[in-house]
Amino acid sequence: MLAKPIISAAEAAGRIKSGDVLMSGGFMGCGAPDTIIRALKAAGTKGLTLISTDTAFHDFKTGRINGIAPLVQDRAFVKIIASHIGLNHETQRQMNAQETDVELVPQGTLAERIRCGGSGIGCFLTPTGLGTEVEEGKQVITVDDRTYLLERPLKADVAIIKARKADKAGNLIYAGTARNFNPLMATAAGLVIAEVEEIVEIGEIDPNMVHTPSIFVDCLVLSETQES
Image 1: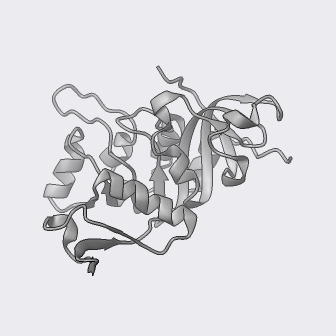
Image 2 (image 1 turned 180 degrees about the vertical axis):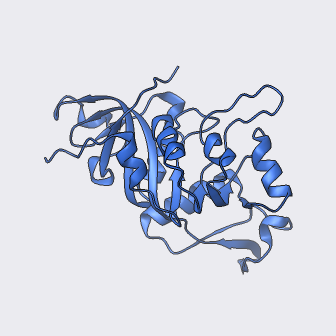
C-alpha cells in the first residue's frame, strides 16, 4: 500500500483555486479542519462556493469565531450551501444584504445530496421541503399518490476534512461526533485533503476501525489543533 503525500497547510491552501467548489467538514466547529482553514485565510483565496453543514460561530457581540467562519468573514465565498447559519451573524448579514448567495438545505437532504454525489446516484426523491422555499425551482414528482421533491447530487472540486488519526496510506479514524459530515465529503470531491491530529505507520490501524478508507484520500496535513 503506497503512502499518501504529507503536505503543509500552506501547500493544501495552494491547491484550492478561485472558482472551486469547496466542501468543508465540521459542525459548529467540531471536526473542522482549522489548520487548513487558517492557511486558506492567509492565502486570501476568493470566489469559492462552500458546501458545509453550517458556517460555525461568529458572534458580533462577543467576537467569538471558529470553524469555517473566518473565511466567511473574509468574503471568500460567492455562494454558500448549508443547513444552519443561525450562529454566524456575518453569514446572515451577507445573505440579507445579498452580498453572498446562500442556499439553505435541510440537513438530511444535504447529507443525502452529498452521498449521492459520492455514490454516482443521479438524484433522489424526498418530501422534505414541500410547500416551503426549499421547493422553489425544483421538480415536483408524484409517485404512488405521494408527492416529492427531486433533489440532485452535490460534488466538489476539493474537500477539506478533519480526522483524529491516519496511517501513512491515508486510512482515517474520526473522534466521536467530530466525524459528522467528514466521511461523506471524502467520497464526493475530486481532491480530498485530510487534516489529522496523528499519523502512524501503515498497519498500525486495525482495518475494522477504519472510518474512511485510503482510496478516498489524496493527501494529509498534520493538524496544529486537538479536538477537545
